[in-house]
Each structure stands twice: as structure tokens, then as C-alpha cells.
Length: 272
Image (cartoon, rainbow, N blue to C red; front, top):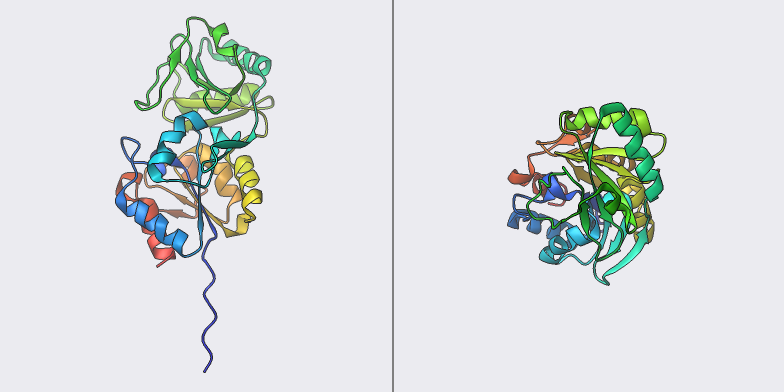
């Protein structure tokens, strides 16, 4: 009597966004999600975090998770080795290009409020006049003048407009500077400009090569339009119930919300 061959893993790589996806209120991860990810890892899968936050704004979350793998941060501009505390890959944004892009957008819609994420492991988020920080758990440093945003290398620019919605500002910015920079809507009050060619898919591709895994063996979870490139790169994309309509339109599956352990629901089914 011969035994049946071992069943292949449904997915070798589990890519999860953080805000609105894996994280609940207060930057916490539920016990159920912890357990579902642990079970998937025990079955042989790898978990990789893919977030718009730069490394300094995500390190406390990784520490809380006991996370020791690679993390794609800063909207794909950074690949971080959490175990070693090292940046393995990093793409800075040209600051002159950022200023030009802002000028073109303001010529179209009037004044915008800007902030930047600086480049590096211990860099800061600088917020210019008028910019409102909506996330209560991320430290920021106010600056008095727009020009003070460009004093050190950066990896992205964050925009807000006093009247336009996030979707409207994203649409206008893409129409005006989409050929110069990558424009994405990453969350509420979070329209961002990245270096051209940089998005979650480009960062995930770098990390996947280091891990020797392929798009065809990857499942991705997200909730916002900045997750669309990651879904396109991966074999299977799961949108949370609270997701933006643009991501829902390209998702393979809709799960429960982040507050209702939507990731765990899917992983428990796949890795049971």
C-alpha cells in the first residue's frame, strides 16, 4: 500500500497590507489573525508585509508581531530585513522632480498641503504647513516652510487638498504628472507621489526574488488602490470588505473586514 503524495501548498507566499487589512484599530493584530498566519507558516508558507509606511513607521508593528522576515515598505521603495534590521533595497525620490510635480499639480488645482517621508532606517516624516496628520500612531515633525521638506533625501511625497476629495486629487494629479511620478491613493487623506516605476508590485518583486518565490505562488490581501499593482502581480488577490471600490473591481475574492479578521477567514480555509 502506497501513501498519497503530500498535498502542495495552496500558496507559498502570503502578502498582506497593514492599515485597513491586517491591522485593527490601534495598530493591533488579533489573536485569530496571529494564529492563522502561524498555521500557514507551519504548513510551509511565508508571510511578507507589504505596506505604504516607510520602515521607521512600521518597525513597532513588526516588533509587536515578532516578525523576522522581509517587509516591503514605503509603497515599494524599500525592502527591509526585520531580523537583521537592515535595508536590503531602497529607492530615493528625486527632490527636484518632487518640487516640479507639486508645482504642476498646484497650477491645476491651487494650493496643496504636502508632507514627505524621509529616506533611511531612522528617518522622519516631515509635514508642511496645512497638512493634517490623520493617523494617531505615527510620529511627525512639523516644518515651517515648504522648502524645509527637501533638506534630506526622501522616498515619497504625501498630498492633501482643502476641497478636493482623495479620489479627485488622485485623478487630477495623475492627469498632470502621471508621466513624471507614480501617483497613488493609499488611504483616507493619503494621496502619494513615488519615484516613477515604484509601487507595491515592484517592491514585492524584489523581495520575492530574494525569497525565491514566484507571482504564481503568491496570494495578496489589501484594501486600497495602492494595492492594485500587488494584486496584478500576484496569482490571487483578496480585498477586505472595507476596501476601496477600485480594488474591489480587480479582486478575485472579497473577505470580511480587517476588524472582523478577514485575512484569518481566508487562511483558515486554505491551510486547514
